Image (cartoon, rainbow, N blue to C red; front, side):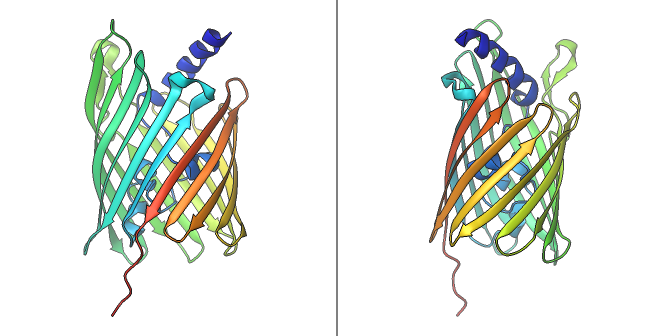
Length: 274
């Protein structure tokens, strides 16, 4: 039974994620990955344009165990450093085991184009290893993102991964996936954040997501979300203590089961103006 689930999970994971974007960061995972408008360290993996909003150096590490199988572990890291003009960032994500492994490592630059408009670009090295018989595949991909603050409460975000459609294999012209994401978020109050998003690859149908984040008490957050095609539910908790944010949660896919996740983020204190 375990190996049957493993095979099903491998097929699902390869089709949905392996050739391109893999969700990173517990806050994003708890919100059904409707995170294209969220401006935090994990925007490195979701929308480089959103990083332009950051005013503090921030770094994070994350871990996820897809479907509670050790073969489908995912580790991620992201770091963003604001400069006098713009924000530079680096990050990486590793997924799988020796018979099926992917990695994505890169760097980016984001900046404010106007008072309420941000943009970012990113270059990534992406690699895919299936097993000893099929060998390794790798390539360089480019990513771009935009973030607009429509009002004090509304945000609009857009990102596209693998703009140039880098090739994975000459056979059948197979390529790393190109992934488009468009989403909006709305602050109903200081305590409630609603998010909606649609994502689409070249070969797969659009996937729609919706989520909510609620600040139950000071520094403590409750999150939940749902995504379609296939249907997946998610939930999580977050706590901020001074410069540290701890987030944990899980998603649930009706066929393959639970995917617990955890992340830790550190943000430097913003320097006070003299």
